[in-house]
Image (cartoon, rainbow, N blue to C red; front, side, top):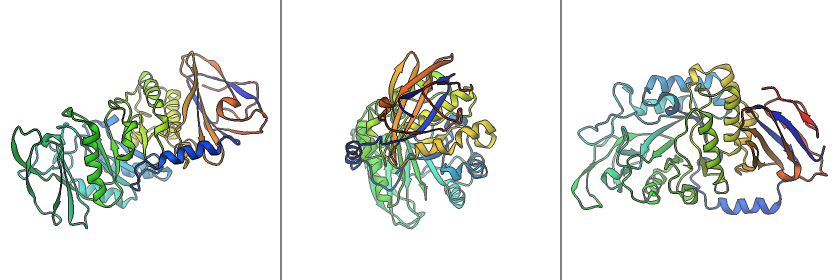
Length: 426
């Protein structure tokens, strides 16, 4: 088969794996040269996969929901496909800290505490993530203390409510610590108190709410340094919303960095965020990934074809695949999208090169990116509302028109491709 192919699509993404001599030595070396600058903390060699509470539950989250979600990831088979992180977003802590200044899990919703959830999730072979903020406050969080169970060194991280200073303190497990801090702005002097003790957390999402206007490069780097001193891999997710182009500076301090504002469960949000994230494709690689926000698949605001497009593009862009729906009540159709192993394999490919948009005209687009073993992944994406043909030539995706190729459609919309138009069911 040579030349190219055409197909008809009604707002549906089709991911193709094309076997060919498509990755030159020069391109591979250039990517390898760049990855030496990525954070080497043992986390996120491929984009993280898991679940996050915010898109569906927002502040209506509690420990029973977290436990039930962990169990559902296993019972649905999603965990076996790589969805390992169970991430609690905002609203897990009380608004007020205790008398020692320590962050306390909200008693009404997390009566057993975060450590109990860590143990529950770990016992099932999964990992727990938690949320904090690089600004003055969010709904719940001002101070976060991460302390490894068997270490005597605790890392005290104080948010910008107290000048975002970072101090290392010596402490035995469970010991209450009080430190005196001078605020950098010199406006006042006060006591900063060690925050909530979180043992065994595997993932930190660090938000940007109510920031003090200081350089995010400084605020986020301090937390990175503190996490590094904990002594084990903790995936560090910067949620700076892309305001200061974090793709250009965050790779040395974090594992993922948000390139956009918050996602919404509608078609306009998905398409605009995909375009915004595409700009930064060359900065991603093993250990550090562009993050266009969590998945909306299954939350009800779009059609199945639109959700399939959403999942396909996120997979091709090597975005974190963090489920944002209620896994316990997910439909068979939702699970079939989230559980498409071959599409997941595109996302988790060890070469780690983000797929990019290579052509767009009148809402008909071609996205592509190289994979390991001399393959290329292609998404033919109709962003319009009516059926239309999309044609792509082999040369556009780095293939020689004279070389034979093998094409596999990962959504099973057709069996084989030739140089004539192939109908695709909507």
